[in-house]
Length: 287
Length: 287
Image 1 (cartoon, each protein chain N blue to C red):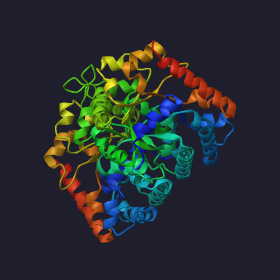
Image 2: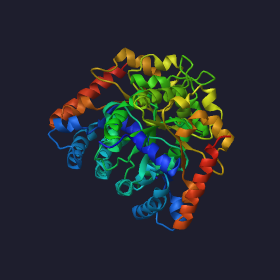
Image 3: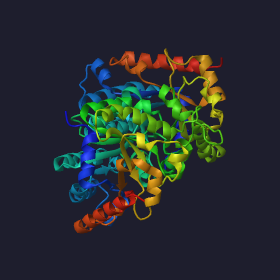
Image 4: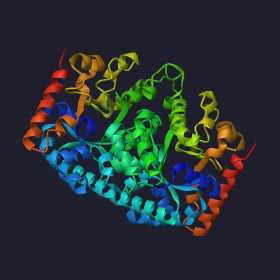
């Protein structure tokens, strides 16, 4: 068995810094890169991003939707990207936001987290509308295979609040309950001395005072916090401190357009990656 | 453009009755059918179920997770199943529970709802943890292509209540807000005289008094209510009346194991389908 995901991610973040770059081959970006909106274009785009950016960052995050747009042929490209990343020693978080119950959830776990599956990167994103507990089959498979999950918790899109800020009869907000469940899931690994548990959360960096308003204890989660919303139009130092507080060390900033938009030139991609990492480090530094 | 999904589904339900049978090639079922847990086994299972059961029911619901277990080769089988259903004139609801925001949500919409996509059946299931509004790109593509969506609203798995029963600051429960948004999305089609709008919900038949407790107005939704939980271990007549009330005419009962477990013999599959339909009709009849 491979080492646990949390340990591997912590090492990658210590080595390369707290940045994860998306691989998002969506149509306007393919066009801007002069590539066809086809499996061939997907492949060219993805492998170029992976090879150029991958060695400079803690993790890459291919977005499943953009591969599924091209059906099974697109999914075959995603498999190739995952295999290429493994060969390069680059961690991948497959952004698939899957969620279901029972044997169906186990099906997704087999697909994205089981040893030997062609769609299994190092971690996968999950969506908990059916409850954090419904994701248990995925957490179990991940624990066995040394992989990780990132569960959607608190996002910055305006439509998300209606679900995520709602409260149960005891007054606990949905996002806070997700964070508490993640903390419980990470407890054994943390007690065993792991720097990060293997159950991360997705937390938007631009959610402002919401974690505090909702009573979320991000410092207790114990897993990585995958956070979109850094960079030029994103959260600055004060806001980051406000959102993440003492949990800043667990933040893995997720960026995409700011880097990918600089391509396809390799030097420009590398430069944009280094620039994004500088911005992230600055935003995460003490106020 | 094809006719709107709601109209096509209403016609299929009037013709064949309010039953949707899942195509769930999960490992124990493949084993029970004497088939390998491989793309070849998936294909054999799926096409046999489709050809035998499809012509007797309103819709079939292939479960994406069980195809994704076999990576792109499995997804290619799902494409083949969708194409075969179209050739047979059988409606398909692809159970994929996708959900994301912005251009990524549009990517999923392109995959599962756009005209010409190999993964587009007649409808797809969606998960609204990021808010009902985040699904708008899918609703837009569906409206253009004459396809439909089923949004997770209120499910009967015990872990679901923590999210779905929670309430916003105005006291509106998450599941009730989803139902209200679906009603708004269906308003134009209903006003135009369509028997069903193209935006359905997933509502567990065994949720008991939850819709009433949460103030959900299922009668106002105007789209189909895809409802697992009928049959021997499921909800009886009184409970169905309690859960769905006047919205019973919009219920599309979803079943799977009760039918698929009778296979692979074709006569047994047909008999189990007919039995399931009788049970559903009985459970949906007036108390």
